[in-house]
Length: 218
Image (tube, rainbow, N blue to C red; front, top):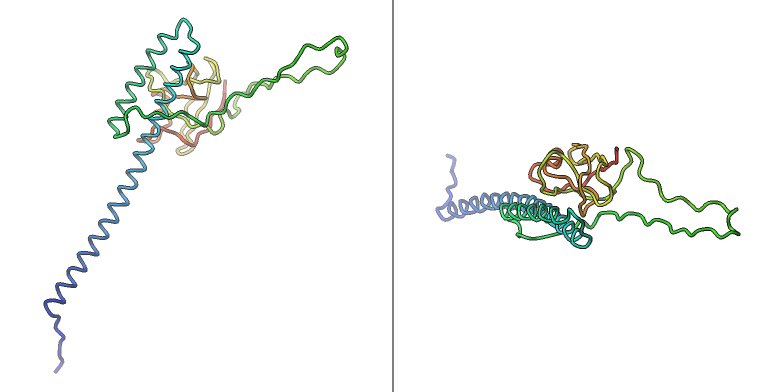
């Protein structure tokens, strides 16, 4: 006659507690992973908004330092944009008013200084010419991140390196989406997109494009 081993009540309770602990630990790990991913996403959103705020503040500072007849109107427009960015920061759970400048913008190359040749030097070769402007389709603003200005209207860009009327093609290398826009105003960034242009290339929920290809095409 076979004998079956019975498990005592205390041992059953111990096994049950162990199973619950294991299940709870798994749930905790999943929750921690989810929270970490959400925190990373929130950080990207907040950084993008902070960069956009800093770009607009830099633009206002530049207008105040070197004002012209249109500076007052431009400053009022950018102040309204800053107010909207702060609303977005609050809605996204970011620090309202947090600002970050785009530190990756490459400054324009210094132009060589030449002097008028003396009579004894008139037969010498001409001084080197200034660097040529980027050719059409040539990559510019290498290493720059791209964010939005908060301005409305048709797709457009602003820049601190290219005059109004310049055409730029901006490609988000994370999703291979591109937009071709004209520069319409000055900003504190090499290439700053307005809301409509940024929507054409952005990834959902992100306010900053880290990997970009910016080309001068016209």
